[in-house]
Image (cartoon, rainbow, N blue to C red):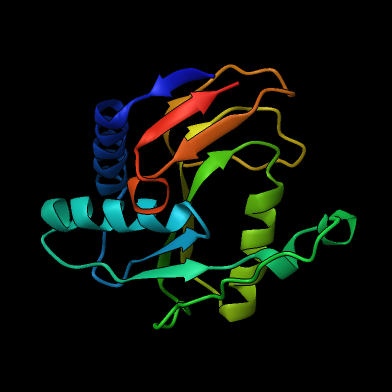
Length: 172
């Protein structure tokens, strides 16, 4: 596996993402929602950075999209559900949706479906650490930490300290 980002580069990418989000506007009504699993700690890290830039705390929630995926029936094993935890209303509020990798767009589409079942945000922006291309749906991130050129068969693995014990992005 080839290391694409180490811990320092990942931190720098998150700093740049926070700056870009702040330039787009961060109101006191804005909320941040991470897509489980690795989107959640990334959302928390962005919220921490944005608090410094916007001078107010942004609530963070987590979204489990398991039952919204379009490949659920194709899986050999029943998936593990971690649950959604969004202890605030999203109705008429700006929402920043955070995920680790944007690939085909299917995960983001599932997240959009799940979010719309919870309410109607006034604005929805997508922030991803890695955009590797190869869309199957017309989905585009508003904020990207790193654009990568990949082959469709490549594997991108985002590892997060809180989950994996290390911060890095690997490509195979």
